[in-house]
Image 1 (cartoon, rainbow, N blue to C red):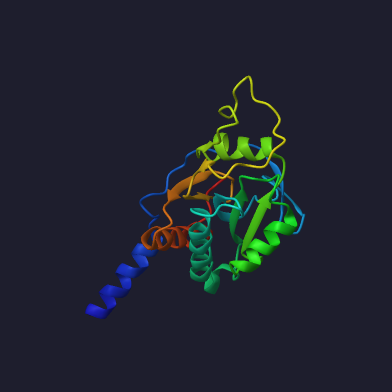
Image 2: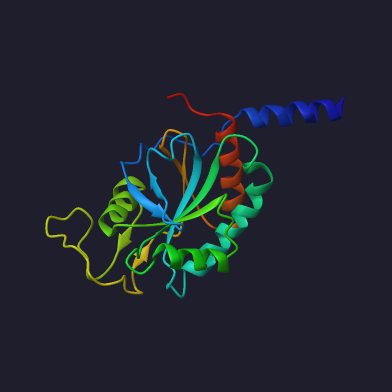
Length: 207
C-alpha cells in the first residue's frame, strides 16, 4: 500500500506545473544567426521549449562558469530532450561584432556543446540588445553605450569591452515564445530548470 501511495504521489507531482512558472509576456520579433550561420527567428523557435542565457566568448570571468553550467544543463536534459517535441538551450552573444559564427563554433566545441541541443547565436548588435533588454527583460550595460532604447543610441563600431555587465541567469521560453521563469546557474537552479523544461514539453500551453 505504501508503495502504491508513493506512485500516486509521483504521478500527481508530475501533473502539477512547477511553482515558479508564470507568464511574463512574449518575446518581440527577432532575427539572428546560429553558430553555423543559419538564420534563427522568433518564428523558427515557435513550438520549441528553450532556455536562453547571455555571454561573450572573450569574457574571462563570469562567462566560462556560465558555459560550464550550460554544459551541465545539457547533460541533464540530454536523456529525454531528443525524444519528442523539441527542446533547446541557447547562448546569445552580447558581443556579436567579435563573436562570429566561426568563433561561436570554436567556443561551443571547447565547452562540449552538442548543437542538436545547445545553439549559440549572434547577429546585429541592435537586434541583440533589443531582444535581451526589452524581450528577455535582462540587464545589458556597457560604458560606451546609452541604455537600450535611448534616443541618442548610436550604431556601435567597436567590440564589447570586457567590463560589459550582463545577466548570468537562464530564461525559460515556452512553445509560444512567452517568458515563463528565470533561473540561477547554481546546481539547484539547473535542476529546477531542467524539470520545468520537461514539464512544459509534456504540457504545451494553449495558444
